[in-house]
Image 1: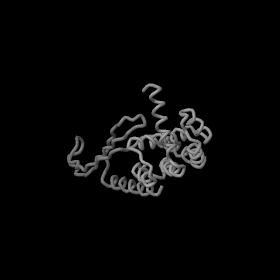
Image 2: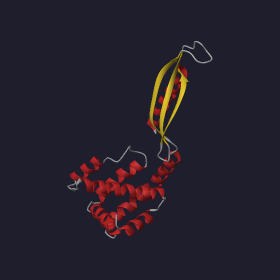
Image 3: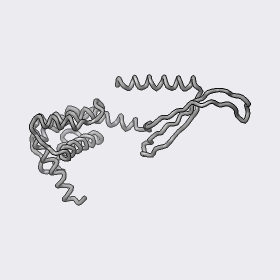
Length: 199
């Protein structure tokens, strides 16, 4: 995208953000910041849209998505670089001359209150991004014989894991367990899930 078009796109989003009252902007930002702090599973654009409509502020779907993406990217980027509130506002002013003073004050205040928490959450996510389990399949089998033993008659469980590595590549790992080992494995997974629900 040419620089002129990019600047026009940013200015258009900034104009739309500045149409929001300070309270409405603060509410939308608060929604995004709680997500970035790990306190929400995602940003619910329908909830933000409903709140805007109740305040009689109308945006088409694309304009609303642009506002949410812009704020999300701004706060996420500031969290990664551990920017202060003054640095955040300075970068926003460099990016567009369309900012209203009231909007910048809201963003400055909210980042002063929540910036450190967003930064620590970003660091924690970076440390935890080793690999991510995306799928697990298992099947029960019965070993009846082998090269070294005529009659085994012992059940086993074959587990196949699909893992996304930090590079983004999906790989598969498989292993076999006895039934008691699999039952213990299952029990540990349930305990981990229960603990993660409380976090």
